[in-house]
Image (tube, rainbow, N blue to C red):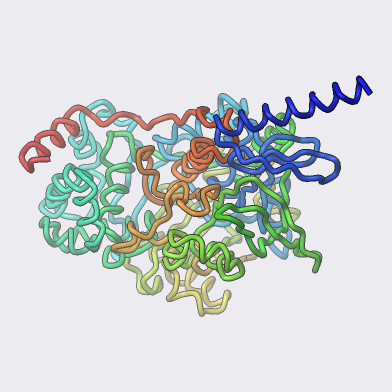
Length: 583
């Protein structure tokens, strides 16, 4: 009886303690009998299995998803990453039907990607020289021939001269057809770059304007706009100047071209693909160190919302008709507008709860086509990375072509070079050049048959740029069409782009290069691997700040490295402009 009284009073004291703690910390206590466990809701539900870490689902295994997953792991969360692709961890190359390697889009790594370079060298312990090519030149071709060559600014005679004077000196002799008077008309854009982000109202003013309108207002000549700026935008933001926000255009041109003399310097993957060389080591690192769960072939069916909080993710794997419910404490959507529309169409509770997501899902994506050609002979080009400009066969799209046998088989070591060439040809005997071609804003090409796209490339576009292609024959080819897969920064789209974390549901964050970071805005801009990765880290940080990951993580933050500071003349120019404008 004495022991019973003691146990009784202990229970009373324990219950009172919980009530007191609850009143001080505003903790909602739900005592439930479920697998003989007590579930405490610390502003978000806590997993009921043996792992008491908050469980967060990350949907999408692009750079935004990987940035989110890594940051969440470092914050001490249990993480499940879901992606629809067969092999999100890059264990094997994506293969064509004939067994040759293929990559969706050829993506460069520009100078100001501090967080990705830090990940690769400091955390994955990969040597930059083993991962990337040296910085390369790029050539712009029109039906009239070579228009311009972008130099490697860091190896020029003027790498340390203030911007934009250094760029002018380094590239002045590399425009073969564009008159100096047209090149000088870009000066009007320099003032706009000092002014467009002066405050939120000014940014919205520029955002509602098209890039083409801006060019006209600041005196950019039609020749410069049509022959250089527009082709650059078509392969940089994947739309023409008539269809792009002037604000985002200025962000892109500043970040990639004018912030520093060396801003435009770009490297490429030295061999294989980004997934194999970077993503696979990252995935293995997270699996080994944090026991992350990665689910490929997983299609999100719906997101369950209860009391303004995401509670579970329902998904189905492609090889099964069975759906699985994944109970979570928070979620990060690392998807674009197309993926978001698909999820919202099956998640009525989420659509009803979040006006922000519904607005974001109304944005339209951009069509992309990726091609790879295997030729019967080697073709030598001026530069390995190249841009198509104003060819009729483009049908309004932007186009690039990369000589992979020059980019990815350039080792001085014969055995390494032979190995890399063999990789490009799969199990077949190597013959000639391997060319990766990408089309952006590709709606005018999307309805063509694959063989018609290949025919346009080998008979019009490639020989129109480099005449030596006339004598080459296609041994094998592969075409992949991807409708509406890239985010479109259309005029007025800024107000619809999603924030890093939502007002409702409060435990749902968003990652991707289209996300607005607000106070935590980063210097990387546009359609950018660095920006996507950074927004993933910031999405995890936002969940932590909101308390969705528990009280003890509320004041933890995963560091994000800034890009290089603006140069003194830019800071001075912006300060003077603000003083003149009165803000």
